[in-house]
Amino acid sequence: MSGILLDTNIISEITRPQPCVKVLEFLSNAPELWISVLTLHELEYGIARLPKGRRKDSLGQAISDFVTGYQDYILSVAQEEALQAAQFRYMAEKAGKTVHLADALIAGTAKVNGLTLATRNISDFEPLDIALLNPFS
View 1 (spheres, one colour):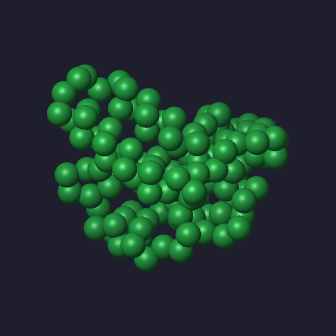
View 2 (cartoon, helix red, strand yellow):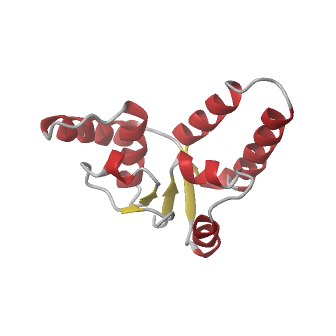
């Protein structure tokens, strides 16, 4: 497999009233784009936390439409991804860094599937042995 695994902040960016032009250009020119089930969790959790209203409804619809369009490109976390994530957390801990569980599992998914992780939060993933790309820069 090849392509790009999108971190939550990349998908969130496209729902903003004025998304970063660099991110939009990146998404329109990128090779195969993939999403982790953990990103779906983070997006849905963020929407669930919003107060009822127009903003919550419009964001929910935008994310739902995006996910529908990428339905065949959503990656689950299975045993191999979980084991890789555990190794990543241990490596980071030995280096004096903390990697949160969701980030470790997203990184493990990228590594196992041979994907580059697109994220604004490069520093969260730097201690890990994965290819990273910041579409904001």
